[in-house]
Image (cartoon, rainbow, N blue to C red; front, side, top):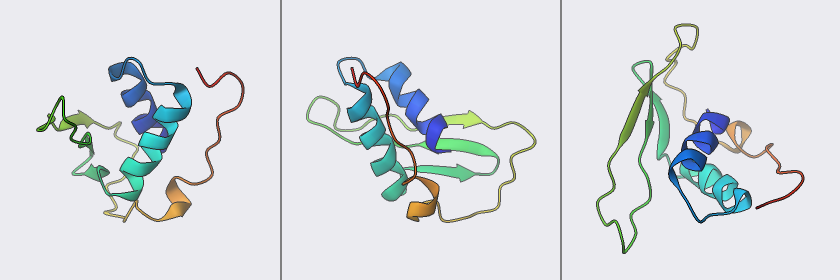
Amino acid sequence: MMMRTFYHILSQEKGLTRAQILQEAQLAMLEGRAIIEERNFVYQPKASVENPNPEVIIKPLPGNILDVGKDLTHPYYWSAFELLGNPY
């Protein structure tokens, strides 16, 4: 789920470095804004001054991913990821 969140943000957010996108993906997991719900990936972007009410993103997951209802906020699910190479 971490990399799905990372690549979704990468495809949507222009003007952020990959390091900033990785940080946003990790924060989304930590804050419970990126979750698995009923075999769907659900991502709630962070509100900002430019976009105070961002649209919730819902994307279906492949059939082999189980909806186990786990709490993905635990660091086990997002803390191991590192960015190597050019952060831009």
